Amino acid sequence: MKKKSTRTAGSTTSGSPGPGGWADRPWTRSYGPGVPASPALPEGSLVDLMDRSVRRYGSKTALEFFGARTSYRELGTQISRAAAGLQKLGLKAGDRVALVMPNCPQHVVAFHAALRLGAVVVEHNPLYTDRELRHQFEDHGAVVAIVWDKAVERVRQLPADVRLRTIVSVELIPEMPLAQRLALRLPVTAARKSRAALTVGKGDQHGGPAPAVRPVLPWRELLNAGELRKRHPRPAAGDLAVLQYTSGTTGLPKAAMLSHANLQANAAQGRAWVPGLQDGRETVYAVLPMFHAYGLTLCMTFALSIGAKLVLFPKFDVDLVLKAMRKSPATFLPAVPPIYDRIAAAAAGRGIGLESIRFSISGAMNLPASTVDTWEKATGGYLIEGYGLTETSPIAIGNPFGPTRKPGTVGVPFPLTDIRVVDPKNTALDRAPGDEGELLIRGPQVFAGYWNRPEETEDALLDGGWFRTGDIVSVDDDYFVTIRDRIKELIITGGFNVSPSEVEDVLATFAGVAEVSVVGLPRPGGGEDVVAAVVPIPGTTLDPDSLLAFARKNLTAYKVPRRVVVLDSLPRSLIGKVLRREIRDTLVAER
Image 1 (cartoon, helix red, strand yellow):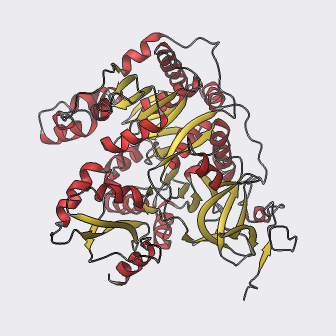
Image 2 (cartoon, rainbow, N blue to C red; image 1 turned 60 degrees about the horizontal axis):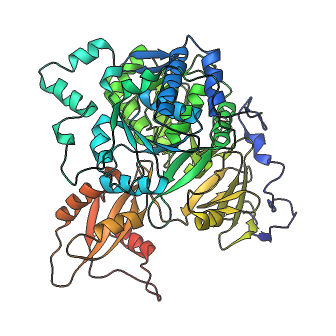
């Protein structure tokens, strides 16, 4: 039995981290073979990262999209031309550039082109509703938006008081090989369906108020300005690079400020974690959306920093993945548990081998042991679980790729990363190994704060650079971390964070709703379902199907409740606060 104890932050008793965390980083003893405890971090910005890769891997394939390939040298040229086009539009250092695209070559080019001018990239889910886009554009004030053509109309509908000046429209089909472009024009149902999923059609046009007068520039015209002059302002390592929106405990999503140094450090930490990688010879599958922090770092920066071939998928499609495996077999696959399950099952059913995949890392939700077993039998490689948050760029903790891993835990801190486990009500009190407490993280990947949210930044970042994760964890004698619970009431569904308050704000506007509380109910395979508990206005009858239809018009699909439960009243505390935990426990018990 472990000895239970709580000590003050100033304690130097063995087994307690003290105010600086575990200063000697004892978890490094559990690192996989060849993983350095203190790797050197690259100097400069993400511009320098891209320049190094173009220089080192010029003739090698950087991007593959439906079989069409772009070399690192060609990618560097496209980035330069796009940067020159953005500069011609008046983009300056510090301006925000909104990206509203799925995974595609233009996404990669636009991301690095904006950074080259010292601008700040803001990532958006292209399936966001008008309401969700409006909140974020009002918050970050982007002057240029580079947008998938299927989402252009939604961005054009933003009101006149939004600062946005110019929209650049991106088409996916021109980036595909000629044979596939021609096939999409065939007068058959399958071709029409595939084409409609990739480009704008009649269903993407909608009415509404006349949009603000903003020019829409085709992507190809953005590249017509020639290459960027060699002498231009370059961002410094500490400059802001990305605003990445994340749901908080209350209210609407807020933007985490990630610097060039944060993102470059996390890419380098990831590289150090997998010493078996061969620079310039790996193939990474981008099945994760790059507008999500997980996909952004693992694909947009980490993969390109090691000269990998990045195979891009506009969305996860098991058929496309297995087709790509025949021509460009993956060697490194970052994903989430349901994706591993679906690929493994489909590959086994079709007799397609997965043995090329040596390394796989799972995040965003619990990794079931059954998924690990099935995947590792299919590939012969490792599948390990990691932990991170948008605020940590995102990876902070991971299981080793090797025999020291511990399934059921999220692993040990990454190189150059410190942790503490503290009393959540008094962060000056550290917990000993075995005791549960709130996880604090410090490292070069920890963000600078929340955009335009000084009070929330002050709450999240403590003296000494410690970030409060809001997660309750325990640490065993080998310093492996196990997630126990969350202080924050975020719902994690499909790898995405959902703010209950945001969903409640939408549902509360539906006719007949008196009160609403949104909770997450655990799924057997990991993650949660969004469920709404609703109290109707007295004397009215509430139709759950109509409420869900209303939600689908105003929320991205993953935020829409899977179920509506009609109640007579909501449980409240003595001060009138709705007790979400009690609602959740009741609904779980009634399953």
